[in-house]
Image (spheres, rainbow, N blue to C red):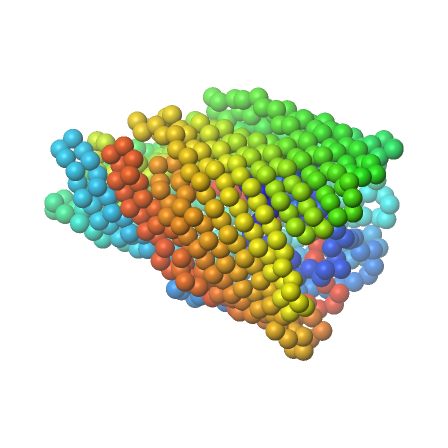
Length: 603
C-alpha cells in the first residue's frame, strides 16, 4: 500500500507488473536485498511506464557473471479447508545470455457463508425473506513462466518470455436454504491462459515491446430450486469466454543535458472477446435468454513529457492523449501528470503531485447476461458499461525522512461498482455493476514510525477522509451520499532473538463505518500475527502466520434506502493460518518479469 494513493502499481525495471499481493510477496521473499539497486516511490507516474497514478519501481541489478541459482518454496494454508502450493525458480546467467524458469502448482478449496435478510416490497405488499448461502469451490492450478534474454554489456537488451496459467478442472457446490427457496447448484469448468511477450531496449533509450494473450474458459452449472409455495425449477447453463489481446508499445527517452530529460511514445492495444451462455430448462419456468456476443475493443495512446533535476529538487510534466472504442462507445481522453519535489533543507522534503488514470470493467460484466446464484439472487451484466477515470492529487511533507504528513484528493468520474438491488416486479435480488456519476475522496494521512530500541520497529498510520458517492441512474433509486471515514493502523516487527534469528510480526487496523452506493457498511477491524525463523546462513526460512485472528475483517452491510431493506453478513470463515517454507541455493537472483493482466477475464 501507499498512503494517500487510491491504488499502487508495482513496476520492475520501469515496466508494469500486474502481480497479485501473493505473487509480489513470493517475489520479494526470494530476492536477496543486494539484488535491489533502488526502490522509487512515485505518486504521479510518468507515462513511459504505461501505468497511471501511484507506483513503486523496483530497479534490479543485472548480473554479467556465470551463475546457476534457484529457490524452492512450499505453503500450507488452512481457512476452514486445507490448501497447499509449491514451486521453484531456476536461473542461469552468463556475460551475455540469461534464462529463467518458474513453475508452481497448488490446490485451493474455499468456503463462504452469506446470511441474507430481505424485506422485499412488491405491488402486493412486503415479503420477508431469510436465506443462508453456503458456497464452496475447489480446484487445482498450474503456473509456468520461461524467459530468455540476450544483453551484451552496453549494447541494449532483447528478451522473450512465455507465461501460462492452467486450471484444468474446478468444481463447486452452492446451497441456499431459507423461507423463500431451497437451491442447489453445482458449477464446474476449466480455464487456460497463454501469453508471449517480446521486448527490445536499445542503448540509446529506445524501448519496443509487443505481447499476445489468449484466454479461454468453460463452465457448466446445474441448478435445482424448490420454492416454499411448492413450485420447482430446474435448468442447466453452459457458459464460456474466449479473449485474444494484442499490445504493442514504443518509447523513447533523451538526456538533453543540464538536468533536462524528454520522453515520448505510444501504445496500441486490441482485444477481441467472445462470450456465450446457453440454458436448458428441465422443469418450471424462468426468464432465461441465451446469449452469444462478440466485442472488439481498441485503445490508442500517445504521450510526451519533460523532466528536470536541479540542486534542491526536481519536476516532471507530461500529457497523454488516448482514444478508446468498445462496440458502439468511443471516447477521447487527456491524462495529465505533474510532480514537483523540493528539498529545501536536509531534514525537510515537500512533494506536490497530480496524476490521472483509467480503470476498465471485466469483459463479462459488459455482456447482456444473467447468472443465477440461487433461486433468489442473480448477477446481471451491463452492456455499454464504461471505463472509469480517476484524477488524483497529493501534497506531502516529510520530516527527517521518517514522519509523513499528507493531504490527498481523488475524483473518479464514471466510477463502476457492483451493488445489490431488490427488483420491484418480482422476488429477485439483483447484483449489477453500473457506472456512477462520481466517487470522490479527500482527506489527510499521518505516518509516524516508532523505534524505541533495536528489538522493536513500529509504524502508526492515521487516515481521515470524506467520501462522496453519486449516481443519477441507479435504477429508479438515484443517490447522492457522503460519509466521514477514519482508519487507524499499527504495524510492528519485534526481534525475538538473533541466534536463532526469530522475528514476530503483529499488525492491526480499525476502520469506522463507511458507505458503498446504497450500502451502509459497519465498522471493521483485524489483527494479524506471524513468526519467522531464518536459518542456514539466511538461505532458508520457515514462518507461521495467522491473518484475521478474530474473524472481524469483513463488515456487516445493510441497505435502508428508498424502500430497499437488506441485511448482508459474510464475515464467516475469514481466519487463515499459513505455514511457509523457502530455501535458496547458489547466489539466487530473481529475474524481473512482467506478469500478465487477467483482471478482466472470467465470469
